Length: 427
Ligand code: EPZ
Image (cartoon, rainbow, N blue to C red; front, side, top):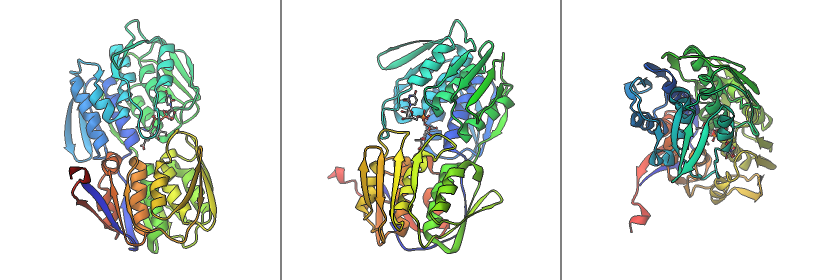
């Protein structure tokens, strides 16, 4: 099996450019279903989740040309199936993002019910409630959700119980083809949703308010293919910012390829901890913080502190001069990372949704397991400063969302390598 081995203690220098945002690219790919013809997406990250979404679309009859490593030409003219099969939804629950566009274009969808994941139940009840308000009829059998909008979609006002990213996206992608106007109240405001709305408007949709809590969508008859560039990945950027804060040689490293405004709360909290982060063209310059102050963080929907940066923030807190509290409000089970960090010497106590982190002088390298995509990346980053070697396994999680992660760290001077080791379960 492949693991990532890190030798701690090597300073970083230079700069890194992040890839396109996974959590935008996946939805933009799904949205091509709404515009028969050939849409070209640029700055697409070369990661396994994108490959899975490609399989979902091809299974429906779309063709995908890999123009180059980061440019996909997706033609959905010949799509004649509306099913997201279990084996692909089980691999990647974001496959459920095809539900809205399938309903918008074909008036029907058959989606395998997404199972839970390491983060929790990951239900889609809010997606379904919102789509039912637009006139979609649902039933479920044999582990599949059957959605029927053969009587058409009718615009209405939908108030989300929680500002769910996925529910907001599915509702927008269905509403663009509804009769009349839809208003989504308490909509999620993530930058990836703004990116999706931008592309849909380029395709001919009429969406206003994306990025605010109230999004208004006036239904249109048809959407046309476009060329659209995916925004930079703010979470990948935040991950490298933590690496720089811990290990930048001579003071700083540059992290570019993203919009720093998409990480406002993260930068604010890290500056409170004593990390100097300067805005530069196309990103930030982050300075090493030799003394880190403790911090209190609540993960919340954008513009609050993103849950996808919780593990990375915990690495910084683990080395702060004092005690921090990180509260996870988005997922019911996103502290498994903490128990891996404790194996590296961190002092962390979990009480329900709160992690109480008492800063320690240093971390020690250990064999650890990636609990999920972001936790895995955070363990590699912790290994950069830990004493000795850290070996991170279950790195398929990392490959889902971090393109060329090892290569990017090596380009900054890290002593990191992907190595193949015998799988203990093979004994
Ligand atoms: C998106 O997931 C992201 N994934 C997640 O990133 C991210 O953590 C999350 O938004 C929050 O920002 C993609 O975009 C592919 P939600 P999503 O709907 O859409 C509950 C990563 O590491 N909920 O805002 O699933 C849900 O169980 C991933 O890149 C319901 O109960 O997030 C969760 O606890 C991890 N019912 C919470 O809300 C619903 O109908 C947030 O879910 C929908 C959601």
